[in-house]
Image (cartoon, rainbow, N blue to C red; front, side, top):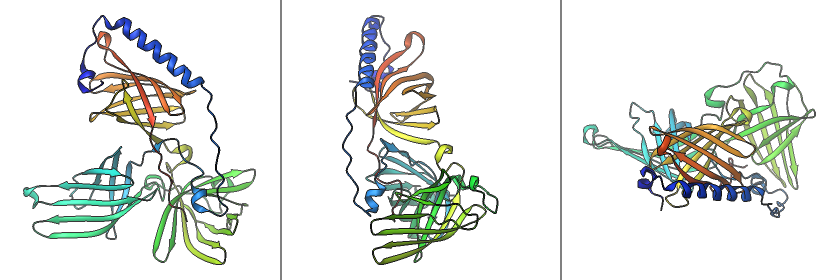
Length: 384
């Protein structure tokens, strides 16, 4: 069984032959996994006009990491915050009135619950956040209690900073708007009756036509420097956007018509750096199984073109490696604590399979490793 104590155990000289056998076995297994033809699964046809089916047309092969910087809207005020999620473990830090001790807890089934306690030296202050993830943002309640002021509860919304312009940095574009300036990723805000839906929109050019992917659907329109009118029409549903250019994106209206029922929203689109597309470094989350035995760790693979960064949380200590993912081969080297760590693994239908090494010189240990796909969250944001 692979456990923490096994990780520290030095191999004997007599392990050489067994190690070569393991390497040969793993190489054969990886080759078989890579070469085995995959039978395509029959695809179910979505029902006409079904927004939920349209939204599920794209489903990533593994979980997408949602850790990072967030805007925390608490009782109408905005505070910078950071959310860090590793499987079921979650840490939230909100910079609020100097009380920025991390709240620690769980993230399970799209529900976040984190708590921090300061102790008697700070009036037994306790802060807690309970919120539900909708595919883009978290919404719920923020609680704060101490022996001096009692308990206060306020609504909280956590929105990733790349909505509204990658990390708060919006791209400025010329007016009148040129067609070549339009492609990119935008933070989208739809407002109706005082409530706002935050999502993401991807603008592309296709042989002179402007195409926009958002809300699980694809819209299309012709170019105009005065107003864009992306349209989606399927079955008894028709959507029409009317978007006037602004310095950072577009503003306007959105009309949704299903049958004879109409709904109208105000629209704000802000183009941002790092918000998505080729500029965003996407991070994928896997279950890491080392030496073919539990426990199961969490691994995060961050990709930008062919550059790859892999971090595995092994018993609370991170093994961080940098390298590449080229032609299905993940190869990276780095550190686990004070020693060297490296991985070489072949991509397959279920994730990756290969070898993980730790140590230096005669103390090098080699283990088979599997990075297994985790269940992907169904939506990349709310549909409307």
